[in-house]
Structures are given as C-alpha cells and as structure tokens.
Length: 187
Image (cartoon, rainbow, N blue to C red; front, side):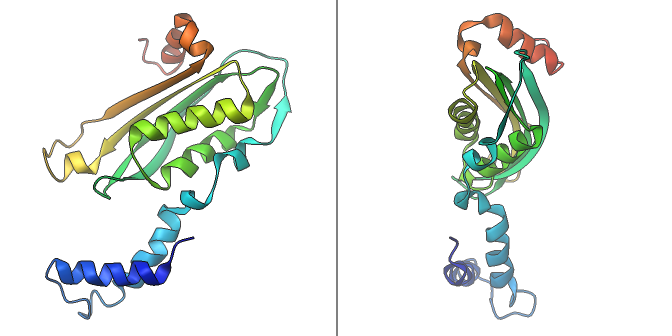
C-alpha cells in the first residue's frame, strides 16, 4: 500500500532540493496531487496478473490467439521517468482461453509499477504460462522511453523493442514468423 504521507514528505523535500519553495502558491498542493497520482500509476504494485487471468473458458480451437496494440504507460525504475508504447501478446491455447480484456489487464498490472521494459515483457509471458497453461506464449513490447527523449542522449522517437518467447514459440520458428506476420511486420 502506498504511504501517502511519506510521498507528500518526499515531494516537499524534492521541491526544496531543486531550489523551489514548496509553500509557493502553485506548488502548495503538489505533494497531495503527486501522492494521489502515485495511487493510480503505481497501483500495479498491489495487484497480480493472476487475478485477471484466472478465469478461463473451454475452447476446442488450438490456433494462435493474438491481442495486439495494447497501449500502456509505465515508469522507468532507473530514472522515474515514463515509458510508454504498445504490447502484443500471443498464446497457443491448450483447451482453455481467457477473455481478451484480461490480457490487457495483465499488461496494466505489470506496467503500473516502477519497471524496466525487459522485465515487463518477461513478466507478462511468465504470467500467461503460469495461469493459462498454454502450449506457448510470445510477448513483444515496443516503447518510447522519456529517459532517452528528454534527458541524456535526447533522441525523441526512438523505440525499444523487446520480445519474450515461452513454450512452443521457443521450439517452432514458424510460430514466431506467424506472430510477426499477424502483427503486419512480416519478420
């Protein structure tokens, strides 16, 4: 659970640290705003993807299920700056499927915490394998990182792409090819 009082205290100290006056009219309510914002953008710390992926439905079809272009926003744990983009999730059911909105909810759980993209990608794939028990899963995440855009190297528009393969996606290159083809990327 987020300790709102500690967040408010930290924001006041931060504002003082950068040379601002936290009692200035425009900043006086900022610690409270940031504390409330933290409840929202770090809410994934108090959730598990399993909660959303637990309810499945019997399905005879065994073809690939792909949910693409799932928008997400996260926070880089190294700089506490946002990174955002799209996640693409595929799995090969083994008799059970999950509601499509639950895949997007799983992305949200892991995105709404201080995070690195590489870990985010793997966490989603691992959660699918644990909860759905599919024959395999593949996750690709494409994101722009504000730590690359507004500081440091300052390269706006650059995107980082990560992928995680589990199960039959590790063994069958044709499935990986099909995944990229379904994304319209034909790799």
